Image (cartoon, rainbow, N blue to C red; front, side, top):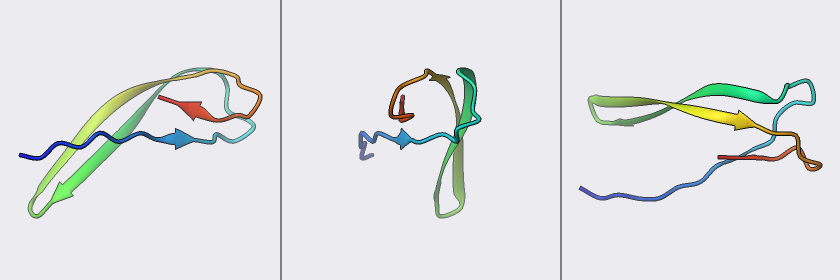
Length: 52
């Protein structure tokens, strides 16, 4: 089994409110699909980029 660390940068729309959201991330390999629910905390930044 190989593991890999990944990171994401999201740029939300201007009408998105600060708070807690759930994002669904998925991966498919052949006949197997895995979905994970990831809680995301949105904070107000000057650049409007969100890291999690």
